[in-house]
Length: 177
Ligand code: PRP
Image (tube, rainbow, N blue to C red; front, top):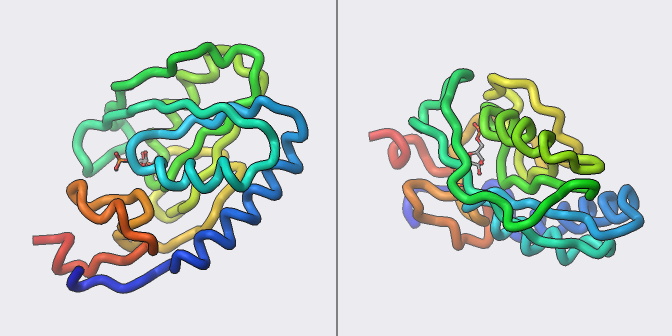
């Protein structure tokens, strides 16, 4: 892959996920803990995070689409794949690869809170606080990162690079025509 550099290595990612798993296991001594991963980017983080958590987990997926990648605070969001189960009365952890504007999560939390979970929190591997348009309370953050375009470990650029083991920065000449 041309014009990229490793930003977070596989080893750094795995080390941090192990720490996050310890913390989450401590915070939720009793299962089941429902992990809801947001497709597609979170699939790889979910796979590693669930194995780092000692508490019994259940795995669910949701699909969200947002119109226009130049998201604004009024960005429209809709659910394209809903949960297959009720989360009423259960502890829920929403699993994201990255929180950027916060538009996706603020919408999604609103949807999920209406379903009366016992508790709901967010775990994200990456957080770009500089880009926030909507406030989102994120309980578990892997890495706070600057506003750089990152790919790999589930994150894509035009659907490419999701299978990289490291998280890499794509140089501007690749991202912007
Ligand atoms: C990414 C990421 C989050 C969302 C965060 O998904 O996985 O769901 O954007 O951005 P926000 O905080 O600005 O709302 P994306 O729309 O790229 O879809 P993908 O996971 O399928 O790649």
